[in-house]
Image (cartoon, rainbow over all chains, first blue to last red; front, top):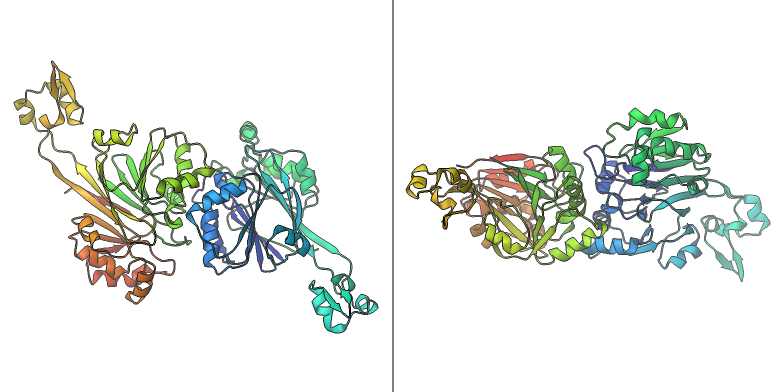
Length: 314
Length: 314
């Protein structure tokens, strides 16, 4: 089971009701954060999931409402006892932005590794792929992909594919003459050599099973590439800065989307569920406009701070 | 009348109950902020006093819990319509810290002027003194002094002396042969030349009246210099990171104070009232320990987020 926790669902500036953009994926005791606006660490405290196991932070773009919470959060993670490396992924400019913000937090007890403007997918379950990153990172069963969006500064959308472990296949293990005492180790991914013979997980595991796909798109206009990128998502999290369709001019000018535009992407991408987030501070009651989304895509819902969504493998 | 608003009274890291260090002085429609931890702008919104008239921000030191809120706040002030300059005062290193944090907010619609490591007092009511700062700053009846404290990084304490305007003295105005049609203008501080004769406010105003003194001391050990610096304060705001006197070792090690230590300064400095702030995140209920302060100085009280204290001239 996996938790998606909306830590902040506001855009622009924080309000008493809404912290700024941040969402957390909590899976198998490890955490991925997407964006880190002001208020993120307080929301983290309120949901009580702990800071130590945040291993990856994906930043969509270098606007204050998506990144200002970072120095405080990284500092608090440091006080939580973390010693494993933490990876920050972001668009062009992210390394310099992190360096600048961290001026006031000169020391962290863990390694910080920034991956800037990386196009394509990173498989964090593949230890060879992780080795290339140059950090001692404990593999996690997740593949992160990015897409360039259309905003007023370089901006990434992200998708997260959480792989489901294949079942242990006892017939296959016997057929491959795998010694019984290493079955467990192979199942969890270790590779073992006995008498010059290499044993791998493929010798004991069954066929691949369908995983879960979560996609996160903010801040952007609704460009066509998004449809392919979020295709088949179990959960599609998308910005809905403006509720009213009458605000379409503002959406175009400020490079954002209306509820209806976000729902149109959902309708065209075979996603199971849409959750809207990143509401304008002027949008006091997003629920007043949810029908603008539901009319286009019925499985449309609204985020709110500290909403917890759980996902299960099919 | 003047308002002192505690925007955040936590130290170290923010909690759901306490934002990080920040206090506001609101007087004659203009505002001075002291420190700007994470959560400051949300607290500002909650008390509803407006962002546009923040004219001075004093930063005690460059630790995250006292300054991380700055880029978000300055950006929000920019969206409030401010065009007048904003002055930031702070210890050694403040200019570089502000520059680094503002990397993610590259444009502000108002001038930002940083005064670094300025020892002594600045009289913001004296237009000649302000001119030296090199900004077009509308005078305000306040004098700001700083003191070097003893913390793990360069740290300033501040005191604010709010001058009370002398009364208009009609006998003096007549005695000095001041034309009646310029009485009002002289009273508000204008200088006027008529027939080669200079008329000034001193020609129409009575003797000086006692003002109000507010002092703000955090983060530091209780060094002797503080007693002189805060002497005679109408309100002495002081850190009380630890409530229990048993935590004195931690206080010494981390360069902070216990409630009792702060109260001892108050008792030795002829201040009228002490408000403790900057509580450790581990200090869940500061009220459990207020008696440790009251036993030493009876007029000891506790800050909490969004507490509003009003002060009146005697």
